[in-house]
Amino acid sequence: MNTPTALDPAQAADELHHYTVIDVRTPGEYASGHLPGAHNIPLDHLRTALPALKTAAARGRLLMVCASGNRSATACEQLAAADIPAATLTGGTTAWIQQGHPADRDTGKAAWPMERQVRLAAGALVVTGLALGTRYPSARRLSAAVGAGLVFSAATNTCGMAALLAKLPHNQPRATDLDATLDALGR
Image 1 (cartoon, rainbow, N blue to C red):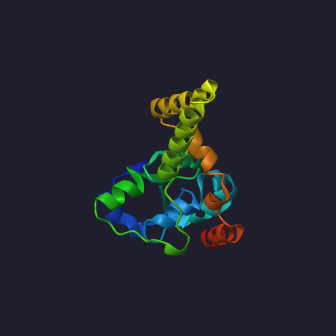
Image 2 (image 1 turned 135 degrees about the horizontal axis):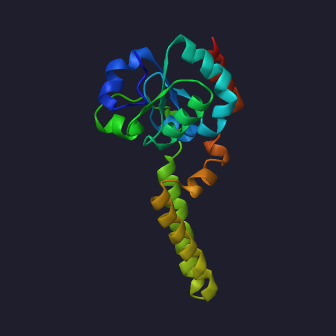
């Protein structure tokens, strides 16, 4: 049987025991809620994880997961380029949880989901630009730039601000966590 390229949450729930689940969100997003048994390998660390993922894929099927399905689809493309078959969860953990499937949470180190971090950063920049614009009219350009960035983000289904926020320390995996995950997958 061929591994499907995409599974909806109901299909994934029925077959979850056949998959090694890899969550490609930031550690903070992962901690806020993930599929049971999921391993966290942030998308920007996927290249480092290729040998361990190849070993895991040799033992069974991989299911890549993120918040909405976009980053996990990107991960599947990167894995396909390395001849590692993987499926993606359509709608991501958002759809998974909305359909009533269980999610594990790491309450001790949960950071805000990336979408919420982006809304906070964008809103703060817009308000700052408008507030400064009352005294320094050219500061309003900051608000205009953020607005243009949000339009571009929606049109291209990418988010430069999320990419920048993902590099903040609270969104980075601790080396020991990533090493333990890769070690577990490589066995």
